[in-house]
Every structure is written in structure tokens, then in C-alpha cells.
Length: 188
Image (cartoon, rainbow, N blue to C red):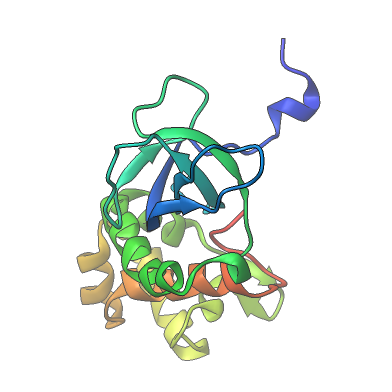
């Protein structure tokens, strides 16, 4: 039986590649040769990870890699969690594109979150934390949501006139990953 501490531990099952370094981790005295590795972002909790890759495997940016507890095809092991500042410049540059792909692939999950967003404080609504959305737009979104839940990103855009919801969500996720935030909407 899992202990209470283990039950609440957040582990990623899958991650997306942000940067793949074929030349590998530099040699150490205890290593015979460099180990190829990738900097990745977890699909569920947006954890930034460094993952040792099995020699001979080639990965492209955005590739989905299993990093869970079971047998792995590409990943030899998860080397550990890293912070945003430890990402390579290539990984930082690829982060918004990979995140947008992840958000669009999980549109139902994110439209569900949009349908459930509420007040954070008596004066601050969660929508106001999203780029380009102020109080008047928040009121319009809430009025439309009261008529019925949003079915998709397209439905959201048609009813609220807020364009490209996926990019707005991605901007907030990058902000939550890269800086200290008082309120988190998407990143644990």
C-alpha cells in the first residue's frame, strides 16, 4: 500500500522533447563515454526534466517520450528535474511551440479548465491572469459561459471574440514555469 507521501507525489508519465543533445553529457571519470540526453517538459505537470537517452536513438523536438516507471523505449533514465534557468537556449526557444502542440492535442482538458475557472480573490478572476484579458473581457467570457459551457477553442473564440486561446494559455504556462507566481492556473 502506498504511503500518504507517495500518494501525493507528482510524477510524469510522458514528456515532450525540447532539446536533444546527441553528443551527450560530458565524460566524467566514472563514465566511459558521453551519454545522449534530452531536455523535456512533462505532459501532466509541466515538470522540466533531463532524460538520459538510449544510445542510437534519435529524437526530434516535440517527440513524446515515456518517462514513467515501466519499460522505456527511448529513455534510459530520468536524470532529474531542472529549473527554467537550466534549460539550453534551444530548449527555451522550442518551449512555446511544443507547449502549443500539447495544448492543442489536449483541447478538451483545457476547455474544461476554462469552463471551471473562477475567482481567485474577491477582486481577481483567474481569466485576468491570462495575457490580453482584462475585466471587461472577463465579464464577457463569464456571461457567455453562463449561457452554456464552451465546447472547443473555436466556440470560445466565436462567442467571446478572444482569438487564439491556445497561445494565450501557452503564454501563461511559460510565465508560470519561468518566473515565481503567486497564482498558478496550469503548472503544479
